[in-house]
Image (cartoon, rainbow, N blue to C red; front, side, top):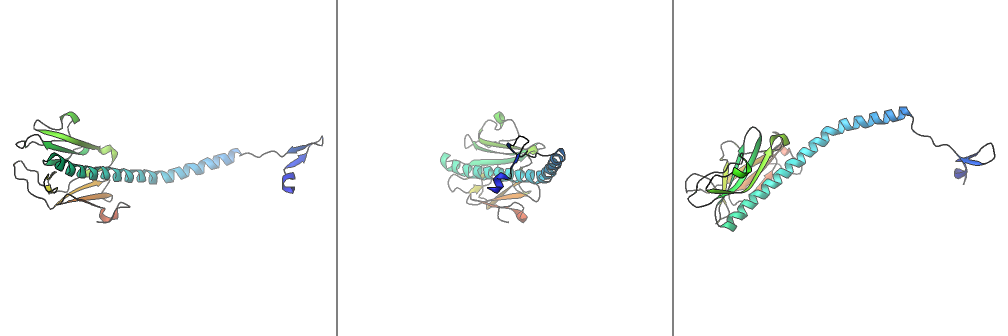
Length: 209
């Protein structure tokens, strides 16, 4: 009760009036805005970095999904499904495709326009392009072929050659990366199964390689 009465005072006419509410002064507002600006400047790089890492994880998840899709399509179509990785000055990309006839031995190129990814003799099933401006890119380690095939009989992976003698592979590696420290490595085993890890534990939530 006393606390309630303390918020009131008598005016010259004997009436009770509520006390005036005190607002922010100009100085207080300037100080608050300055603190907010400092916090934004400090937090912005961490927020941007968080967004980039989430984008890396999303791109890699799509890559793994497409690797599994290629394996499933090989079984469904009863023919070899191929996956080719490419890069240039503006992007990295991959394309899933099949040869229209067993005699076809042409290669698709994901660096070209979507309507002309494959020449006559092959058909694209899916194409993914990653502009360098988005920061997340793909790479195939040096010394490894830029394409891999999924066998329709065994479900395993095979070499992609210009002749008819595709050989079984023990492992095929593809990496999604932001920089040399933030990398997600995908090891495609001989059976067609994918194992994901992060070299040097550079990406949180992924097991170390």
